[in-house]
Image (cartoon, rainbow, N blue to C red; front, side, top):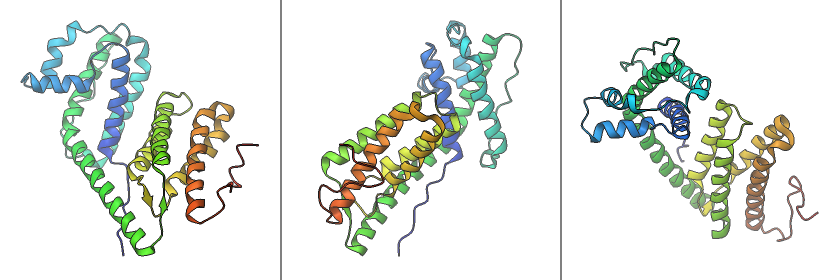
Length: 267
């Protein structure tokens, strides 16, 4: 009997996702990201990242960042709410909520200081979560091998198909990240599914359920966004075709067999 590996969202990783979103706004506005500031403060032996930011803050131009103030406010608000509501962080001595005033440029500085402090505080939790995920990835691979050995049956991808699956996952990740179709919560959920699927893809697998799970997501996206979702849906359809072809080959169906649920692309 094998132990099932359950993948749950770690609260620290969810906060880190928000910080990465915030950093993306900084990058595209020509402002040094928080991750870089934290690393610089450490490498330059500053007492804290706040001290480091105090040294460089006057040299930062917020001109390109100011138009994105509302977006940044939403990210910071979600981050603060998550930290406040999640008991996982109750043992941390979190910084005070930013004190805002009428000057948005000054408020952006407050946000930077706050998020930098949070990043430093939760980094050990992030490291633990990443380590746990890597361990789960190993356990998943072990369980997959055990299932194959127990059943004497497996699905085997060709090297070309496996490479194409990885390419499609990367393309989907990029499409989802930049698309305006998804709200932040839906985007994070889809990206987590892709990350889990990518980490569990092997040449030989006892099932291809991860791929078929995306078909349901594609249906929801089509229902919500119609033709605008075509780039997203087309890639999932191609993944499904690869999964079907692999399953059909394992079940010794004729090579010309088409999945009746996906239709014939040659029609």
